[in-house]
Structure formats: C-alpha cells, structure tokens
Image (cartoon, rainbow, N blue to C red; front, side):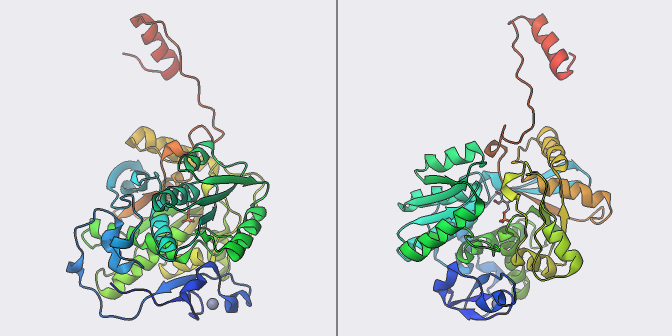
Length: 414
Ligand SMILES: Cc1ncc(COP(=O)(O)O)c(C=O)c1O
Ligand SMILES: [Zn+2]
C-alpha cells in the first residue's frame, strides 16, 4: 500500500506535516475560513479495479486507499453494510445503506477504526473526544479494543442510552455545562498530554480528525461496488460537521479519477440549522451561524453552523442542502419503521425526510437512483426525543380482553 506523506488544506492546498492532524489551516483562518486538512498520498498509477481483495470482510478490504494496512487495524468488523431497497418514500423505491449494522450501531465506526488504529500506531497515550453521542460511543469501543484509555467530554443533554453505551466500554465520561467548555478542556489536554483527538475541539468547527475522516471514503467505495460501479444519481445523508459527507465525496472523487466510475453522485446534506442551505444560496465560503429558538430533537446533528468541508463537498458534487424541522424527522422516522421495518435514530431520519421533500418539489426526479444513508440505530435515542409514546396496555389474559385492547389502542379489528 501507499502510505500518506502529508496533510493538505482542502481549500488553499498548502501542505502540512502528518502530525498536524489536530490543526486547521492557519493561512485560511487568516481569511476567516476554518478549513480542514486532508490526508494526501504520493502520486502513483491509478489502481486497477480488479485489485480489490475479498478479505477481510470489513472496510479494511480497502486498506490500500487507507492510511494503514489491515494488519495494523484496530477493528471490530466494521463496514460492508447492506443496501436495502425501500418503498414508500416520495420518490418510490430508494436504496438504504444501513449503517446501524456497524459494531456500535452507527456509521461513526468507520471514522473510529481508522483514527484509533492510527493513534495506536503512533503510541498516543489516550483517545479523547468531545461528543454528544455516536462519535463518543464509537471512540470508546475502539479505544477499548486497542487497550487505550478514552476520555469523552459530553454535555448534560446527551441521550442516556448512548452515554450508557460509552461507559459500558470503560470510557471515562464527563459532562460540562457548555459546548465551549468541552472544547477548551480538550484543547488543553491535547496540547499538554498528547491525547489523540478524534472529534473537533475548537471553533468554528473544521470537522473531525482528518485521519479518521479517511474511513468515510469506504462508504463511497462500498456504494459504488454494491451498484456494479454505476454510482447512484443522489446520495443523501444527515449532516452535522460534514465528516461523512466530505469523506464520501473524497472516495467518489478518487474513483472517478481512477476511471472506476464515470460520474459523481450529487450529494444531499440534510441539516437542522439551515447553515449550509444559506451558504449554498449566498455562495459564501464559510457557512454562517444560524441560531434556532429551541433545540431540535435530533441531538446528533443539532449544530448552529456548518463546516467549510461540508460546503466544499456539496459544491464539488453539484449537491444541495435542505433544512428540516422536528416534524419532518418524526414523520420520516415513523414511516420508515412502520413501512419498512427499519428503526432509525431521529437524526438519521433527516435523510429520509429530505428524499420526501426533494421528490415532492421535483428536485429529485422519478426514475433517478437514490441512496439514503441510515446513519444510526433507533435504539440510540429511543424515548429521548420528546415524543409521547403511549404506555403499553395491560390486558387480562382472555381473548375478549385482548381483542378489545387491540381495537381500542391500535385500531386493529380481527
Ligand atoms: C446519527 C448521526 N447521523 C449523522 C451525523 C452527522 O455526522 P457528520 O459529522 O459526519 O456530518 C451524526 C453526527 O454525530 C450522527 O450521530
Ligand atoms: Zn488553507
């Protein structure tokens, strides 16, 4: 495999050393744009499409395009998730890439496996992350697998189930009152103790660890391979910092340059704040802060400002952003569970709500091939979304009572 030899700013292309994974581009920051660095590899001949090995049965199959070899991976068998056809969304049939099948039940395992493998290879003393949920759970699991301590800074509103999940892996979870406090503490620890950060930890956010973001390229490789190398017209996903959006775009862009695919899918960022939507409309480089009056029930993607990397991925893929509210999310979440048997975290429902909206307003046309990324399992935030779930009715164990209860509570008549 070819090992990466530098990081590069995704905006101005300035080179940075590999150790700069915890920094932004200072030149772009001087122009008030918070720009990521991304891993770069020495130029080689385009890889042959027939070069992909069949093993291991995880995203590490694609290790020749990742920063480490499969033999060095801290792995739990992540990736290689199925694509499931689903009917009933505004568009008709779509395909769902079900990332809830990953080891910690979210797509964040793709980032964590690569980031923690790298941290282990450079002898980092600890993994550290500032996360409300899935990213922290994934970091905690892979740190446990690597035998590394993991510190998770979270905030009081984080979903109980995910915090319990982090702790089950032995992570040291701490809550601080404000988002800004998490970042301040983490910045100091990264500088002082060399803890390996997997999440963003200073603002305006630039996205997560660029080594980990490489893991999201495998979403693109898998989707292309599962589509017989004919990429979908659209790939839709819920967006917070845009790590997966950027990583996926990078993966598709690589395959196009290698001649493996002949077009890029148009990417859709399903967001809560409207920051990326505003940036796309105004053509500004840096997405603006768009404050909301109340918090969204979609905890995992509830940020007031999009990132440069998310905006860049949308521009490069001729993509679009769409802003959704809680009502859209709940409707899509319930429709998917009841109509298709797929239970998703409320944030993940944003992708499905986006397909409905964009099909209704004619942006996504009938007959187009649509892939929606189901980013996390419904058990992650079950009962924590502010939605009333009626109590399960008690019945006496005779048939009359059962039939009456089915009728009265669920409207079901035999
Ligand atoms: C379930 C879920 N979906 C989507 C996202 C968005 O992630 P990204 O930072 O890749 O945009 C998150 C982020 O935490 C998440 O937990
Ligand atoms: Zn730059």
